[in-house]
Length: 314
Image (tube, rainbow, N blue to C red; front, side, top):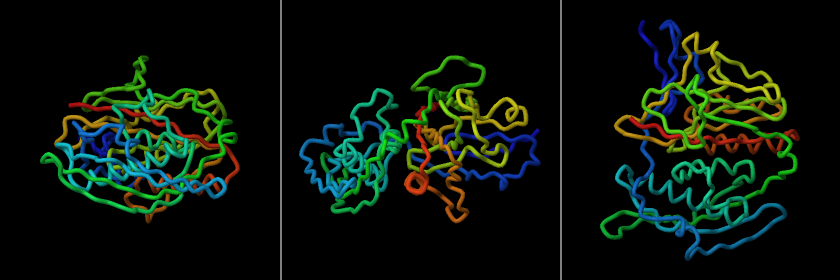
């Protein structure tokens, strides 16, 4: 029987039978993506050496100014992606200076910067950013970019959020008990996302690629967002969905031999209804972060974020 495939960055949902219509799924089709910069000719020392940081505090809001350091172009990169990475390193530095980022986290997958930025969302929000300097140049025959920006960082009230926790979370192949904090899959491997919470809560699951594009995995038209019982393992897709042909399979971007991606799990005591605006066609991580900020400011109930990184290879 012919299979209908809908790409979700490096995840592919396989739907059977073919009569299932793609437009019913609230998941956008994958666009061409670029692999993370390899052989990057900079290191984390660029984040602190020679960086001028100015702190201006207004209540709980911290205004900080920092520089990214030189971010060099890799073989799979272009000028736009180098600029974006320099911007992300500048944001990372601002978060570090605000005291909400720990360098060299042991659970980082290949030093994935996007993973790191997502992971600290439950600790602080970026309220506003202003580019002060953005410059690119050449050194040793290689292009580099540098960004200096001003960021308004607002640390969270962590006492409220400590009430709700992700006890366990993993990405793994079905029927395999072995788990890894840094899983590596082969092209077309089937995977499941497994989550256990300490309290009853709602779950939202997203996939975020290396270009910060966000794809909603759960809830979806085939599985609604009911309250997940405390200490009960939630599996997506579960065996019932897999029997209907709804599966997650990993795949590398076109023309790439490997890719690093992230699955973001958001647990809330009230249904978040994230990224449901039909006008938002191609959401980025910043869009989801903004919705989280609105949710946090308008609700008094706890919520938390867990990020799972993985690599897929051909």
